[in-house]
Amino acid sequence: MKKNSLPNKFRRLLGIAVLAMGGIASAQEFPTQPVTLLIPYPPGGSADMLARPLLPELQRILGQPVVLDYKAGAGGTIATAALARAKPDGYTILMVLAAHAINDALYPSLPYNTRKDFAPVSLVATLPLVVAAPLGTPVNTIPELIQYATANPEKLTYASAGNGNTSHLAVEMFQTATKTKMVHIPYKGSGPAVIAMLGGEVSLMFDSISTSYQQIKTGKLKAIAVSGAKRSAILPNVPTIAESVPGFVVDGWYGILAPAGTPDAIVQKLSKAFAEAANVPKVRTQLNDNGYEIVGSTPDTFAKHIDSELARWGKAVRESGAKIQ
Image (cartoon, rainbow, N blue to C red; front, side):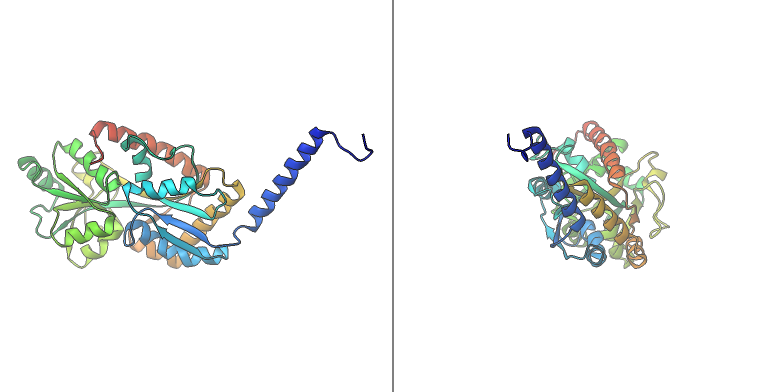
């Protein structure tokens, strides 16, 4: 054996160490190119309304452009599947909504594993739903809605942002709790669903408060109730559903995922960037004014949130008997 040669075992260990050091250096330099943020719904919806105010600050913090890529359809599963296939380098990330947890129980099969194929980055914000309706809908309160729907089964129609979306399953939960039945009309996102309400095509919608607020504020739609545990700061005179249906609470949420295998240092850097961007005073004010409550969590906190939501919505899907239509 040559004097300077090393046993194979030590060569392998040295190689692993060199690769690890390269990974650390790469994570420290991240990002060196634009970051793509996948949005699983069309422009104009609540995810879009959260993402857009964050972009300038994210770009300032990361020092690279952040590009929105809309991949709408199938309750958010198209965009989620695209993330599962993406290279785990932090340059492709996804904004997920509560539908991410719902889909795991709602779809008979998914092109990804909800628990194993993603790295949680941050729970950015939460947002209650508002029961919004065209002015011509013949109910103005939750008790009136229950009474009318009970006396007229399947006469009322409700829009959703898509099959399996929170706006879909929240109504299924409501119908189970109140023993009522309305007809589901799914749309490809909140934006098109709100347009349908404005046109009188549907009776109501359990919508993210951000996408209906301006229409409610200007008197084009009416607010019947909000779905959170407490009244919304931007609609303080609108009661909660729980004031009439005790225990009924549904909040939407918005978080960031990266592909599984993304280096932890990159995940942590992205997490801190989103938290910092959301808490810039002017951004926070703008989001609060649209009903969002900023969280900006750590990856570990978001992972625990996803686990609890998977259990909660799985139970809700089973109990309601909700199906993809």
